[in-house]
Length: 324
Image 1 (cartoon, rainbow, N blue to C red):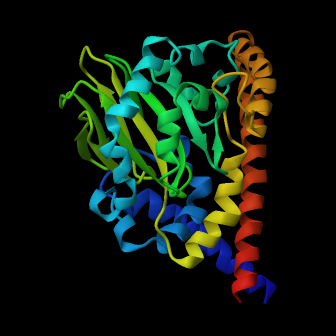
Image 2 (cartoon, helix red, strand yellow):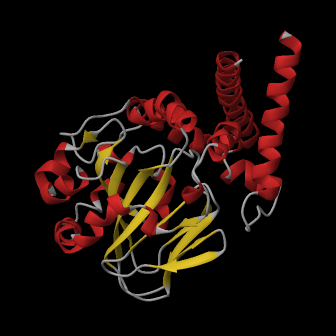
Protein backbone atom coordinates (compact mmCIF):
# COMPACT_ATOMS: atom_id res chain seq x y z
CA UNK A 1 0.00 0.00 0.00
CA UNK A 2 2.81 2.43 0.92
CA UNK A 3 4.60 1.64 -2.35
CA UNK A 4 1.39 2.07 -4.38
CA UNK A 5 0.61 5.48 -2.89
CA UNK A 6 4.13 6.74 -3.49
CA UNK A 7 4.05 5.44 -7.08
CA UNK A 8 0.76 7.19 -7.74
CA UNK A 9 2.07 10.47 -6.31
CA UNK A 10 5.27 10.32 -8.36
CA UNK A 11 3.23 9.51 -11.49
CA UNK A 12 0.90 12.43 -10.81
CA UNK A 13 3.87 14.80 -10.35
CA UNK A 14 5.45 13.66 -13.63
CA UNK A 15 2.17 13.99 -15.53
CA UNK A 16 1.69 17.50 -14.08
CA UNK A 17 5.12 18.56 -15.32
CA UNK A 18 4.44 17.15 -18.79
CA UNK A 19 1.00 18.75 -18.97
CA UNK A 20 2.28 22.27 -18.18
CA UNK A 21 5.27 21.89 -20.50
CA UNK A 22 3.55 20.31 -23.52
CA UNK A 23 -0.19 20.84 -23.39
CA UNK A 24 -1.33 23.82 -21.30
CA UNK A 25 -2.40 26.83 -23.37
CA UNK A 26 -1.41 27.84 -26.91
CA UNK A 27 2.08 29.20 -26.23
CA UNK A 28 4.88 26.69 -25.76
CA UNK A 29 8.22 26.87 -24.00
CA UNK A 30 11.07 27.08 -26.49
CA UNK A 31 13.01 24.38 -24.65
CA UNK A 32 13.15 22.38 -21.46
CA UNK A 33 15.81 24.83 -20.33
CA UNK A 34 13.37 27.73 -20.63
CA UNK A 35 10.75 25.72 -18.78
CA UNK A 36 13.16 25.02 -15.94
CA UNK A 37 14.21 28.70 -15.73
CA UNK A 38 10.87 30.45 -16.22
CA UNK A 39 8.13 27.86 -15.80
CA UNK A 40 8.45 27.08 -12.07
CA UNK A 41 8.01 23.32 -12.70
CA UNK A 42 8.46 22.56 -9.00
CA UNK A 43 4.98 23.99 -8.37
CA UNK A 44 3.27 22.21 -11.29
CA UNK A 45 1.73 19.39 -9.19
CA UNK A 46 0.12 21.89 -6.79
CA UNK A 47 -1.03 24.18 -9.59
CA UNK A 48 -2.53 21.35 -11.63
CA UNK A 49 -4.54 20.34 -8.58
CA UNK A 50 -6.01 23.85 -8.54
CA UNK A 51 -6.63 23.83 -12.30
CA UNK A 52 -8.66 20.66 -11.83
CA UNK A 53 -10.73 22.41 -9.17
CA UNK A 54 -11.19 25.75 -10.94
CA UNK A 55 -14.72 26.85 -11.87
CA UNK A 56 -15.55 27.16 -15.56
CA UNK A 57 -15.45 30.98 -15.47
CA UNK A 58 -11.80 30.89 -14.38
CA UNK A 59 -10.39 28.33 -16.80
CA UNK A 60 -9.47 30.60 -19.74
CA UNK A 61 -6.18 32.44 -20.13
CA UNK A 62 -8.15 35.72 -20.30
CA UNK A 63 -11.43 35.67 -18.38
CA UNK A 64 -14.67 37.57 -18.93
CA UNK A 65 -14.95 40.52 -16.54
CA UNK A 66 -18.76 40.21 -16.58
CA UNK A 67 -18.30 37.03 -14.52
CA UNK A 68 -16.71 39.09 -11.70
CA UNK A 69 -19.25 41.83 -10.87
CA UNK A 70 -17.75 42.32 -7.40
CA UNK A 71 -14.75 44.04 -9.02
CA UNK A 72 -16.80 46.63 -10.91
CA UNK A 73 -16.50 49.10 -8.01
CA UNK A 74 -12.82 49.50 -8.89
CA UNK A 75 -13.49 50.30 -12.53
CA UNK A 76 -16.34 52.64 -11.59
CA UNK A 77 -13.97 54.62 -9.33
CA UNK A 78 -10.85 54.43 -11.47
CA UNK A 79 -10.36 58.22 -11.53
CA UNK A 80 -10.10 58.33 -7.72
CA UNK A 81 -7.55 55.51 -7.82
CA UNK A 82 -5.67 57.16 -10.70
CA UNK A 83 -5.37 60.43 -8.80
CA UNK A 84 -3.61 58.78 -5.86
CA UNK A 85 -1.43 56.58 -8.10
CA UNK A 86 -0.36 59.52 -10.24
CA UNK A 87 0.58 61.53 -7.15
CA UNK A 88 2.83 58.65 -6.04
CA UNK A 89 4.45 58.44 -9.45
CA UNK A 90 5.08 62.19 -9.61
CA UNK A 91 6.65 62.17 -6.13
CA UNK A 92 9.16 59.50 -7.27
CA UNK A 93 7.82 57.02 -4.69
CA UNK A 94 7.70 54.31 -7.36
CA UNK A 95 11.36 54.85 -8.27
CA UNK A 96 12.65 54.57 -4.69
CA UNK A 97 12.25 50.77 -4.66
CA UNK A 98 15.30 50.27 -6.87
CA UNK A 99 17.52 51.89 -4.26
CA UNK A 100 19.44 49.08 -2.55
CA UNK A 101 19.19 50.98 0.73
CA UNK A 102 15.41 50.73 0.52
CA UNK A 103 13.68 47.94 2.44
CA UNK A 104 11.36 47.44 -0.56
CA UNK A 105 14.28 46.53 -2.82
CA UNK A 106 14.44 42.97 -1.49
CA UNK A 107 11.38 41.50 -3.17
CA UNK A 108 11.87 37.81 -3.95
CA UNK A 109 8.90 37.66 -6.29
CA UNK A 110 9.47 40.76 -8.39
CA UNK A 111 13.07 41.95 -8.00
CA UNK A 112 14.18 40.41 -11.31
CA UNK A 113 11.84 42.82 -13.13
CA UNK A 114 13.57 45.93 -11.76
CA UNK A 115 16.35 45.70 -14.35
CA UNK A 116 13.77 46.02 -17.12
CA UNK A 117 12.42 49.29 -15.69
CA UNK A 118 9.33 47.94 -13.93
CA UNK A 119 8.28 49.61 -10.65
CA UNK A 120 5.59 48.95 -8.04
CA UNK A 121 3.99 50.17 -4.82
CA UNK A 122 2.08 47.70 -2.65
CA UNK A 123 -1.39 48.51 -1.34
CA UNK A 124 -2.35 45.27 0.43
CA UNK A 125 -1.19 41.68 0.58
CA UNK A 126 -2.37 38.18 1.45
CA UNK A 127 -3.67 37.80 4.98
CA UNK A 128 -5.65 41.06 4.66
CA UNK A 129 -2.55 43.08 5.44
CA UNK A 130 -2.83 46.73 4.42
CA UNK A 131 0.46 48.58 4.06
CA UNK A 132 0.67 51.53 6.43
CA UNK A 133 2.39 53.57 3.72
CA UNK A 134 -0.61 52.90 1.44
CA UNK A 135 -3.05 53.88 4.18
CA UNK A 136 -1.16 57.15 4.58
CA UNK A 137 -0.73 57.98 0.91
CA UNK A 138 -3.57 56.16 -0.88
CA UNK A 139 -6.44 55.99 1.66
CA UNK A 140 -9.23 56.20 -0.93
CA UNK A 141 -7.80 53.35 -2.97
CA UNK A 142 -7.38 51.16 0.11
CA UNK A 143 -10.98 51.92 1.11
CA UNK A 144 -12.21 50.83 -2.34
CA UNK A 145 -10.21 47.60 -2.13
CA UNK A 146 -11.94 46.79 1.16
CA UNK A 147 -15.16 46.52 -0.84
CA UNK A 148 -13.62 43.66 -2.84
CA UNK A 149 -12.98 40.74 -0.45
CA UNK A 150 -11.85 38.53 -3.34
CA UNK A 151 -8.77 40.74 -3.82
CA UNK A 152 -5.88 39.09 -1.96
CA UNK A 153 -3.16 41.49 -2.99
CA UNK A 154 -2.91 44.81 -4.82
CA UNK A 155 -0.26 47.24 -6.02
CA UNK A 156 0.33 50.11 -8.39
CA UNK A 157 2.53 49.00 -11.29
CA UNK A 158 4.59 51.26 -13.56
CA UNK A 159 6.08 50.26 -16.91
CA UNK A 160 8.17 53.22 -18.16
CA UNK A 161 8.60 54.15 -21.85
CA UNK A 162 10.68 51.61 -23.74
CA UNK A 163 10.65 49.03 -20.94
CA UNK A 164 9.43 45.46 -20.93
CA UNK A 165 8.78 42.32 -18.91
CA UNK A 166 10.27 39.24 -20.55
CA UNK A 167 8.26 36.09 -21.20
CA UNK A 168 7.46 34.23 -18.00
CA UNK A 169 4.69 32.75 -15.92
CA UNK A 170 3.96 33.22 -12.24
CA UNK A 171 4.65 30.29 -9.89
CA UNK A 172 1.40 30.11 -7.88
CA UNK A 173 -2.05 29.34 -9.28
CA UNK A 174 -3.80 30.72 -6.21
CA UNK A 175 -5.16 33.77 -8.00
CA UNK A 176 -6.05 35.51 -11.25
CA UNK A 177 -4.34 38.77 -12.23
CA UNK A 178 -6.45 41.93 -12.59
CA UNK A 179 -5.19 45.01 -14.47
CA UNK A 180 -6.94 48.39 -14.27
CA UNK A 181 -5.62 51.17 -16.52
CA UNK A 182 -4.97 54.40 -14.62
CA UNK A 183 -2.61 56.55 -16.68
CA UNK A 184 -1.58 54.68 -19.80
CA UNK A 185 -0.40 55.41 -23.35
CA UNK A 186 -3.87 54.31 -24.54
CA UNK A 187 -2.12 52.78 -27.52
CA UNK A 188 -1.67 49.27 -28.86
CA UNK A 189 2.11 49.67 -28.73
CA UNK A 190 1.86 49.32 -24.95
CA UNK A 191 0.57 45.79 -24.49
CA UNK A 192 0.70 42.48 -22.68
CA UNK A 193 0.65 39.18 -24.55
CA UNK A 194 -1.09 36.40 -22.60
CA UNK A 195 -0.79 32.91 -24.06
CA UNK A 196 -0.39 34.54 -27.49
CA UNK A 197 -3.32 36.95 -27.09
CA UNK A 198 -2.54 40.68 -26.92
CA UNK A 199 -4.31 43.14 -24.66
CA UNK A 200 -3.42 46.83 -24.49
CA UNK A 201 -4.21 49.08 -21.54
CA UNK A 202 -6.75 51.89 -21.63
CA UNK A 203 -7.49 54.44 -18.91
CA UNK A 204 -10.44 53.30 -16.81
CA UNK A 205 -10.67 49.86 -18.42
CA UNK A 206 -9.94 46.53 -16.76
CA UNK A 207 -9.16 42.99 -17.85
CA UNK A 208 -8.14 39.86 -15.95
CA UNK A 209 -6.09 36.80 -16.85
CA UNK A 210 -4.51 33.67 -15.45
CA UNK A 211 -0.89 34.62 -14.72
CA UNK A 212 0.22 30.96 -14.82
CA UNK A 213 -0.04 31.08 -18.62
CA UNK A 214 3.05 32.34 -20.44
CA UNK A 215 2.94 36.12 -20.83
CA UNK A 216 5.14 39.14 -21.51
CA UNK A 217 4.64 42.91 -21.62
CA UNK A 218 6.15 45.80 -23.57
CA UNK A 219 5.76 49.56 -23.58
CA UNK A 220 6.98 50.65 -27.00
CA UNK A 221 5.71 54.20 -26.53
CA UNK A 222 7.14 57.41 -25.03
CA UNK A 223 4.47 57.48 -22.29
CA UNK A 224 4.56 55.64 -18.92
CA UNK A 225 2.01 52.90 -18.30
CA UNK A 226 0.54 53.11 -14.81
CA UNK A 227 -2.01 50.54 -13.68
CA UNK A 228 -3.42 48.94 -10.54
CA UNK A 229 -2.58 45.24 -10.43
CA UNK A 230 -4.54 42.88 -8.15
CA UNK A 231 -4.39 39.21 -7.23
CA UNK A 232 -7.99 38.02 -7.26
CA UNK A 233 -9.09 34.78 -5.63
CA UNK A 234 -9.20 31.93 -8.15
CA UNK A 235 -12.83 30.78 -8.47
CA UNK A 236 -12.68 27.18 -7.27
CA UNK A 237 -14.69 24.31 -5.88
CA UNK A 238 -14.80 23.86 -2.13
CA UNK A 239 -11.81 21.51 -2.41
CA UNK A 240 -9.81 24.16 -4.28
CA UNK A 241 -10.77 26.88 -1.79
CA UNK A 242 -9.69 24.73 1.16
CA UNK A 243 -6.41 23.90 -0.58
CA UNK A 244 -5.76 27.59 -1.26
CA UNK A 245 -6.57 28.48 2.34
CA UNK A 246 -4.24 25.95 3.96
CA UNK A 247 -1.39 25.79 1.41
CA UNK A 248 -0.83 28.79 -0.83
CA UNK A 249 -2.31 31.66 1.16
CA UNK A 250 -0.28 31.06 4.37
CA UNK A 251 2.85 30.76 2.23
CA UNK A 252 2.15 33.96 0.30
CA UNK A 253 1.26 35.78 3.50
CA UNK A 254 4.89 35.66 4.67
CA UNK A 255 6.14 37.04 1.34
CA UNK A 256 4.82 40.52 2.16
CA UNK A 257 7.27 43.26 1.11
CA UNK A 258 7.26 46.75 2.63
CA UNK A 259 7.16 49.97 0.62
CA UNK A 260 8.77 51.94 3.45
CA UNK A 261 10.13 51.27 6.93
CA UNK A 262 6.67 51.82 8.43
CA UNK A 263 5.37 48.65 6.75
CA UNK A 264 5.60 45.05 7.90
CA UNK A 265 8.54 42.97 6.70
CA UNK A 266 7.71 39.40 5.77
CA UNK A 267 9.95 36.43 6.53
CA UNK A 268 11.15 36.14 2.93
CA UNK A 269 11.97 39.85 2.79
CA UNK A 270 14.08 39.51 5.93
CA UNK A 271 15.89 36.42 4.63
CA UNK A 272 16.47 37.88 1.18
CA UNK A 273 17.83 41.16 2.52
CA UNK A 274 20.17 39.16 4.79
CA UNK A 275 21.59 36.87 2.11
CA UNK A 276 21.83 39.50 -0.63
CA UNK A 277 25.33 40.66 0.44
CA UNK A 278 26.46 37.03 0.23
CA UNK A 279 24.91 36.70 -3.23
CA UNK A 280 26.69 39.88 -4.31
CA UNK A 281 30.03 38.45 -3.17
CA UNK A 282 29.32 35.20 -5.00
CA UNK A 283 28.79 37.14 -8.23
CA UNK A 284 32.22 38.68 -7.74
CA UNK A 285 33.56 35.13 -7.46
CA UNK A 286 32.13 34.46 -10.93
CA UNK A 287 34.77 36.79 -12.38
CA UNK A 288 37.71 35.29 -10.50
CA UNK A 289 36.86 31.58 -10.23
CA UNK A 290 33.98 30.56 -12.50
CA UNK A 291 34.22 26.77 -11.88
CA UNK A 292 33.91 27.32 -8.12
CA UNK A 293 31.07 29.81 -8.69
CA UNK A 294 29.15 27.28 -10.81
CA UNK A 295 29.74 24.54 -8.25
CA UNK A 296 28.34 26.72 -5.46
CA UNK A 297 25.43 28.00 -7.58
CA UNK A 298 24.24 24.60 -8.73
CA UNK A 299 24.87 23.06 -5.34
CA UNK A 300 22.70 25.63 -3.59
CA UNK A 301 19.98 25.46 -6.28
CA UNK A 302 19.82 21.67 -6.22
CA UNK A 303 19.64 21.64 -2.41
CA UNK A 304 16.81 24.19 -2.39
CA UNK A 305 14.91 22.28 -5.08
CA UNK A 306 15.35 19.01 -3.17
CA UNK A 307 14.00 20.57 0.02
CA UNK A 308 11.08 22.16 -1.83
CA UNK A 309 10.27 18.96 -3.70
CA UNK A 310 10.30 17.01 -0.44
CA UNK A 311 7.86 19.48 1.10
CA UNK A 312 5.55 19.34 -1.92
CA UNK A 313 5.72 15.55 -2.08
CA UNK A 314 4.90 15.35 1.61
CA UNK A 315 2.01 17.76 1.18
CA UNK A 316 0.51 15.80 -1.70
CA UNK A 317 0.90 12.61 0.32
CA UNK A 318 -0.92 14.22 3.24
CA UNK A 319 -3.77 15.32 0.95
CA UNK A 320 -4.07 11.82 -0.50
CA UNK A 321 -4.16 10.25 2.97
CA UNK A 322 -6.86 12.69 4.11
CA UNK A 323 -9.00 12.04 1.01
CA UNK A 324 -8.57 8.26 1.20
